[in-house]
Length: 118
Image (tube, rainbow, N blue to C red; front, side):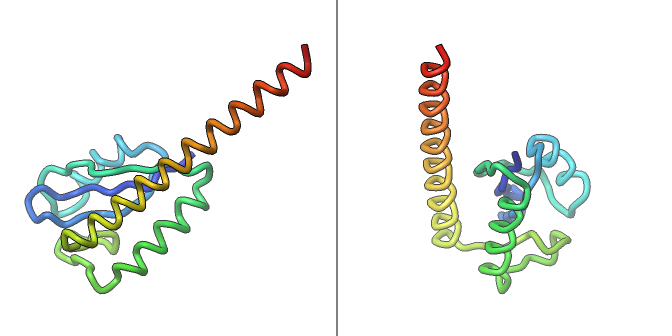
């Protein structure tokens, strides 16, 4: 499992789009490694593989490449307007909904298999 996360620098309002197996620990590292104030988690969505999370991370980095915020350091910081941020958050909400549906389907399939084995 790997998460695609969105965090905000509470001083500048810039956001970081990244991936991590441990987003909570990554948030602490971000506050120490980048030119930021306190970092606030905005949203997170999980993927079944790092490869899938990386693919989405790259897609969003490409989409917002003209919105880079070099002051924060690194290529994953962006100055997004409210509309861009809301669109991204809506995508993450939909992604989480789809993940939940997949998990529920897997649970149903496992229950059927358990019933067949008894």
